[in-house]
Length: 190
Ligand code: GRF
Image 1 (cartoon, rainbow, N blue to C red):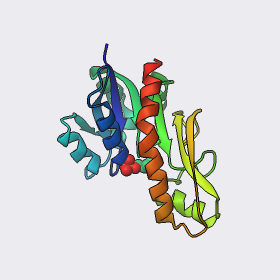
Image 2: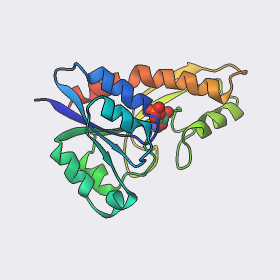
Image 3: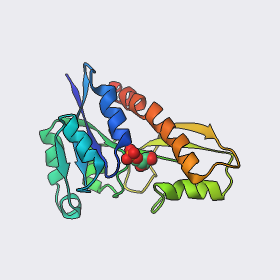
């Protein structure tokens, strides 16, 4: 039986793109739904280009109803991926996808995580602290920001001269290299 992934993303969607590419020819796993809270998110174009249904959600839909859970069930979603999705996931969804929902964070958690720590803010903080290394963390999602059990981390060394932009590029390369494979591994273990 085919396993179905839903990706929640609100930004550029470069990770979503890599995940879609990774599973495009896959026999048993498919990206079947994209969910975004941002009507101008590039990820919606990516969904269209790949013929994947996309759903735009409001805060009200997300927090005051369980309509999204119904949609996920309608599409027979087995696994949820957060890739640049900034809203805290409500309890009904955390519970419905325990062990089946992951997020990617662009730093080595527990460092540089939590509310407000996203995008360039993370890399600016890493740069300010003159860290010798940074990396990525893939973790299960719970009801707190960047707090669930860690599934995987990868590191990259930093130079003193690295700007936040350079750090962002190094981290993004790690995300694109590892995220699709880790998702595949987790789904194959379901
Ligand atoms: C990534 O850096 C990811 O770690 C974070 O949000 C960013 C999403 O980037 N959670 P993109 O939209 O996939 O390019």
